[in-house]
Image (cartoon, rainbow, N blue to C red; front, side, top):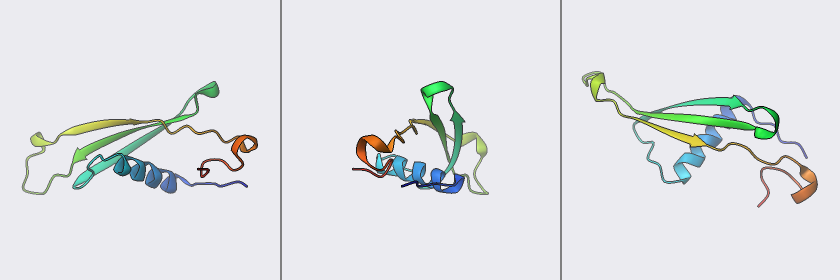
Length: 87
């Protein structure tokens, strides 16, 4: 079985992972940068969370929080039978 995720679906999965880890994303903008590693390093993602600024708030009060996400997974179906959605 092959499962293909497009860019938007991958970003949503990363956002869901961060939320499930207990990181508060309410009223925050999320910028996700994905990088393909060399060799066996796989993919990685850096997530930058910034406070959403309203029109009457100074941008000098923005806070940034970076979260490193290990986005690598074993896609060898021979070991557990299906890839990323195995339990």
